Length: 392
Image (cartoon, rainbow, N blue to C red; front, side, top):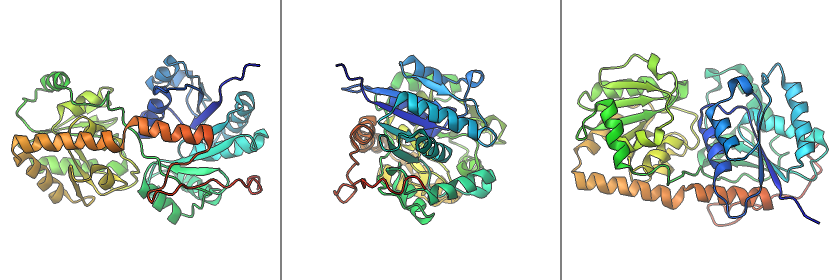
């Protein structure tokens, strides 16, 4: 009798542009030695809002179910649809991404009658969020997740900072491993031809210092500090890429280019990445992506930024405009051989510690076999086999 391959179900609130969404897309479409079935559920998306991420995932042969619901108004319908899909797909594991999907996955799995047969893993993708900057529903959802955090088999954080913050918020899961985000170092890599092409398009000479900032407009990203740093360094060209950046008032040397799909090429064109976030980051993807392209980083000390950058760049306090400007100026003043060595060290750090292959291997072991990654002290966290507290 032929046994069908196991299925892993991924649940995410939406497949719009964002760090978690891009990591999910890169993860499920990555090459594997032993492929298995993966299915994606986008709780909010629908045919009318179909985006490039959903299209790209489908093009790789992975089904994407888009429920097209409003998370508050349509939650009961979303829950029932997800419950029905779980019964149909019969996944060996469910991996949820972000708070709303965590709750929906828990309740739908328990309603489905398959809780004893399906492992459930929640996903933490942020650190010290400031709920006051967002809708009240986010505050409620975080508290609801903390109260129920012992019911999934494990809660997986993508950063050590995020794990610490959520423990302080009341999360007390059975197991709380950290699987850092992984970067596709074949896509994100030094690219001289892309550098020349992008700089020509932006009218930036090859010998002019180019600093890039990649972030959607959001309170946590602190574009005001970016504008202030650019104003303090008028001889350096700054570029800000991200949805909504076209609306930001900026000094003459800071150019907004809006939402872009060619982020790898932009990183390859840059001499340095600046990250100005003031809260909320877990594992900032743009930092690791820029480093993989050979662009060193000046970043604020938020989330796991310090851990990712190591000694290849500079970490400063959030909101410290003087320190950011000084760090950029110091790197600009370095002789070319030293800057080249810094760029090479940045890329090697990502290859050695934050490759996509490492992330894929860790999650696949977890999803298919229930094997948690080793903790920093070398010991493995273990998932308790108890099932008695999963239905209250």
